[in-house]
Amino acid sequence: MIVDCAIYRHGRRSQGPADFSDALAEARAEGDAFLWIGLYEPTEKEFDHVSAEFGLHPLAVEDALKAHQRPKLEVYDDSLFAVLKPVVYEPESDSVTTGELMVFIGDSFVVTVRHGVGSPLHAVRVRLEAEPEVLKHGPTAVLYAVSDAVVDHYIEVAAELQVDLQELETEVFAPVGDARNSAARIYTFKRQVLEFRRAAGPLAAPMARLASAGVPFVHEHAQPFFRDVNDHLMRANEQVEGLDRLLSDVLSAHLAQVGVRQNDDVRKISAWAAMAAVPTMVAGIYGMNFEHMPELRQWWGYPAVLLLMVGAVYGLYRTFKRRSWL
Image (cartoon, rainbow, N blue to C red; front, side, top):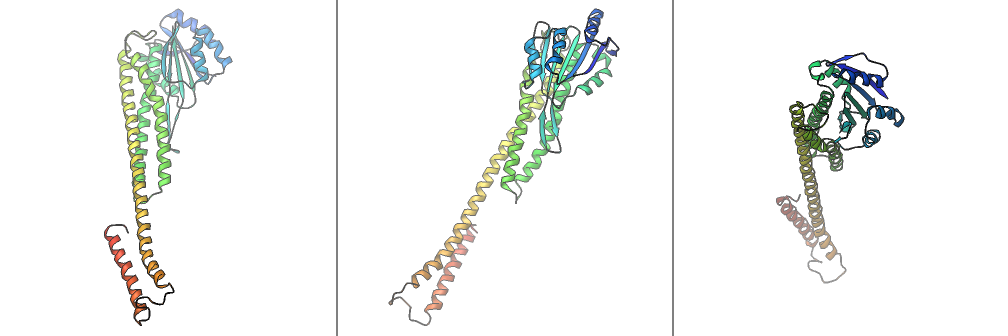
């Protein structure tokens, strides 16, 4: 569905024809105006009329309809097509979700198509309309503002994930904790970081290309602004890579900690089994029905055997305690 449609003249929103076909013709006739259409999860039928009117390439139209695309930048004869993946952090569930945002720019027009959550378009439109000096640069200003908003939100989400990672580290290295629950949380967290990397990592190449000269449909003086976005994106990617490395270290430390605890348990079980084996062995020997056995008929034989068993167990206990087995 079309959520917004407006003509911008000299950086200011103005009323235009209700039909966007007439609005596009009017914007092109004026030369210093452009049409911005925003769509949300359009159906194929809804998008056919838009794509036909603006001359959008069929392959780009297919990508915009099906979604599930990697961030990319493609140049066609009549338009420039960019795919971005906004990221949203859900504090209630400590999870990361991604949406998709497609931007077509061409001769006096911008078409934005969004899927799922994480769309900064309303905030971007409001901010641009409050800055006519930026918006008057045309469709390139919209592409820059959208990219800047998406990338800046990457940094905010990375900061939220950093806080969650610190809490996870505290849980993992706590003296008493549920090992299975910690392992599940580490795995879930790693999946969130992977989802983030899939959104931010592939965007590096398109941003680097926009930051260079010679990209069609991009204003010739826009390179410094896209370089700034690219710098922020590099910072976000470095944060995500750092989170991934720390998670791997936390997982390795957790597994080592589990292994040490298991070894401690095995040592304790072995120590108690050894202490139980000594009296069992002595009692088993003296429980045999032989007539000629040492001290069998002495009055002190029974107490002596009991004392032997207690002394042997106590000696083993002291030995294991000294070696930290108990």
